[in-house]
Image (tube, rainbow, N blue to C red):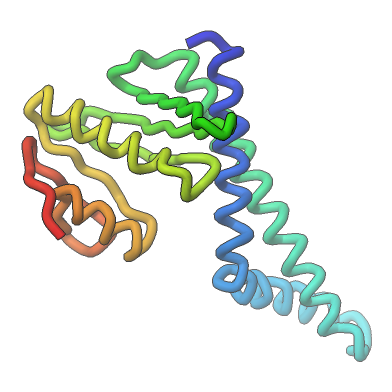
Length: 188
């Protein structure tokens, strides 16, 4: 795929990671607050505690979250562009959906053959909640059915795992690791 075509997928992937990070902030910020508290506690040994230390913890936690998200988004979106540019359609499935309201949805999935299964190393769609994930997942199922192999992936949440179950995926070892046999009937 030419770089000019691959680059919008990378940009969309960056936006998807940033959006997911912001919507999950209430879950991750407390962990960063622990790190921020430890850093400030180490710094506090050299000086007296002040009333603004709580604000410093919040600011440091937010800064750590932003640095982590930005770094992860840059690396992951760059990897998507490189993969789209270098890999064949057997290894990377990009889908661009132009809707009637003139908006564009980008979706993409990386496939890795592992023995008699195709392992899906990430599915993304941007903007979210616009049908891109559903389209790319159905396309993945079609590819696996056409090859007569199982499809294995990791769901990112119980809500997403429930969506995968509706199209024939079953839990393997725990809720997040899932497999779909070729031609599996969708169930509720």
